[in-house]
Image 1 (cartoon, rainbow, N blue to C red):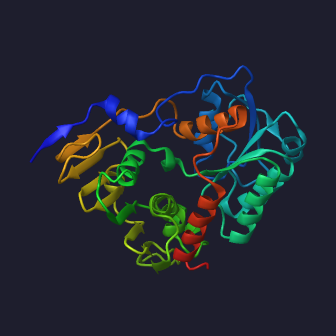
Image 2: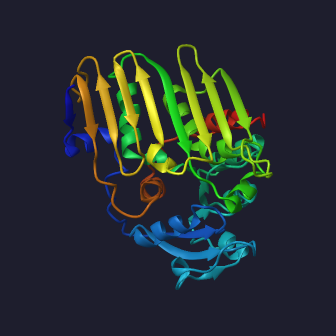
Image 3: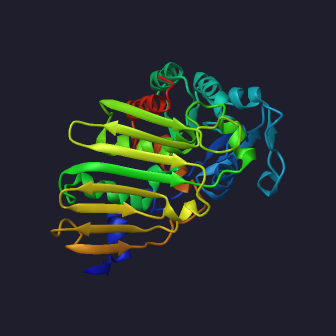
Length: 350
């Protein structure tokens, strides 16, 4: 077997831009606020904002009293009311990080107030409300960025690029799997969503499948509750997306004790495959029949260093270029709506 390690510089070149390249600070920082602290990503977003020279954290709004407000990440922050966030014209960006059930409502209020918005995943269960939100943002020349951080994952970017450029041959399958141990305290809130684990984590993988293959012509969701716990959570789930010449399979469960080690994205083509496993530390394996692009024939394993900065840094770096430089977002509203419709069909909501 031809097994080699691709040079990191080559990998960085094919992995995409913002995920690995820091952006020089603008002469005028962006004042940003965080609305809500109840989302699992909220604390990470606050850390990222506070670390980036492009941003000034204007404050945090905690409109719902059941959300966290204790811990080192909150030290020295200014607490704002919702009206203070919405009425302050100097606040250009709002990161909406409340509970998923509330986030679309808060995001709409921010767009109505003329803000740019980072909306964490998954963007609710109301497709019509999301469509209204995105249309309102476009009308006001604003952008809603979805909180799918694996859009900026260098190994996933490289795998998708290899597929798009034809290096894998004709792509006929996309497979993804996430199976993590989910304790009872985390299971109970997730059980309120019909899709359960597919809604919570499958949304990331459906987003990646739709990025590569587009909107599927048919979606089948299998939502099982296989735990002895009587909480009703869909904890053993599968989504099958059908395309004219390809299938996508996305499996998400809540059991595997060492599941983070086995998270995977696999793209299969007639000239070979690209596999991302695990997601962290970064690892991409490419196995080709014939050399193509930057890859030689046989198996190559790429293990680059993690992108600099805290988690979620690439998302916010791109948002800074959108706000200050007028850059086009990597993902269009049309993509976001297609991904969300596919997710809701897989979860049995549509």
